[in-house]
Image (tube, rainbow, N blue to C red; front, side):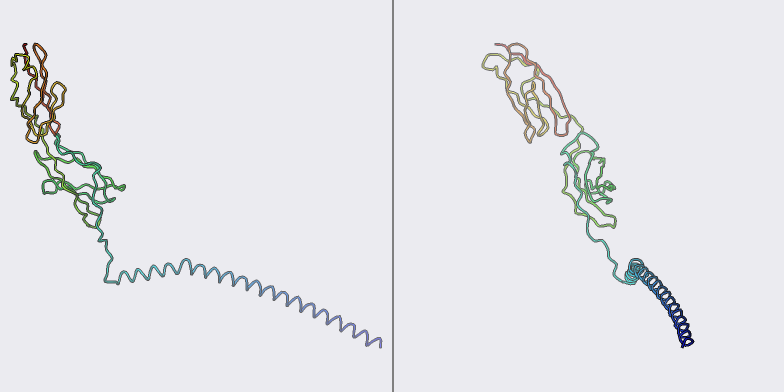
Length: 254
């Protein structure tokens, strides 16, 4: 009995040792499998993200590039640019041979200036949409219009036609009455009638009193004479800004 019990105890002890060794091995394999699983999972997620954010967009761009290359239809810009706008309306008349123009148009387009039916100049518009140009005028009447051309050649509509007169000659003055050096007598004639002609719609100052010439250049006014010699100063300014001055003398006697 004692030998049997001893052998049974030894057998049980060996069995427990084998069981413990087997459990550690199983646990070790399990940890290894878990680590491999996490590694595969991380690697799979990385591949998926790479595919979504890098490979797919490039494939899409490549696909549309091939489609655009092979397509017989080429998309083109056919929309005309905006009509150029001048910041201020050009003057109707000027005594200067050049006119400074400032305006706005489509950024990076070109503004074409038409003067008296022909192309006068082409001016590049900056990136902010602004342009400036010094326009050379022909003597007399000038007709100006402008239009824009974008980078692909589309043309805008033309602006309205501006009428500009270049006139650098001083206005004339023809006095019908009174004559220089006239002598006026009697109290009833003390209010002097002044009549004459100059350029149409010119502006006159007669001793600082404003008088406007009509559409034909005629003007008239009255002046109350002082006893003795009276000086009448005429200052005429035409629509272009040219100026003429003349002074005459009239004597009044009671």
